[in-house]
Image (cartoon, rainbow, N blue to C red):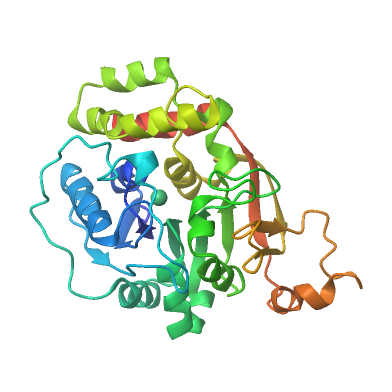
Length: 323
Ligand SMILES: [Ca+2]
């Protein structure tokens, strides 16, 4: 039998994070060594509570570590307008039985990487925890096998400003630290959870037809997010950015078109704060650009940016997890 792959998941557990956690916890060839939480969609203690609740619903036994309660420099801004006050659509889920592990998320990240060389890090949230871990111990970057980042709006519109996606926008300084760290980043932008990837009425009926508590929870906790997404984009259905990223973490071939580029994050502009700037035409080393791009070029480390996915296969991965 193959040795299961080690995953660490960093999350601001709201409704789509919860579904992504279920996918990883139920994957037979994955061992989730730690879940770390951060302030994002909901405040960090709510995020921890939601992660613990989801772990218990899966009958799993994975430690949850609480992390940063605010971005590195910016004022914290939640996304309860999208996911509901509790992040899970306001269905009054009971408190989890377990409490979070005693170590801080930042130390848990460092320890998990050192104990599991080649580990897959999946980030579903602002990158504050990972940035703090890299600041504390930069050499961990070289020990990570893959770093799948749900975040960014590569060469397209964002979901919180025209230029930026929420996870990157909330803590752009942290995102910049991660992108410049030498980590093998794979960027799963917000655009990949739109259009064909949206879980439509017939998909929802199919999931509810599985008739089990996880399937019911996955749909129910996204009720608020579904309404907010309709208002935001006009698209009907449940858009699931974190589960799409998880499906790629589980199987990179779900991504159908991707390429490797230098990537940086805008931190100075008001208009384009948190924009993920992708060197799509590979001009960063040109005379015109190399001075500005020097800190990125120095690392000689390009990010893998996914442009399209196979929506049928992404949804199949979702169904398998909830069946
Ligand atoms: Ca998230």
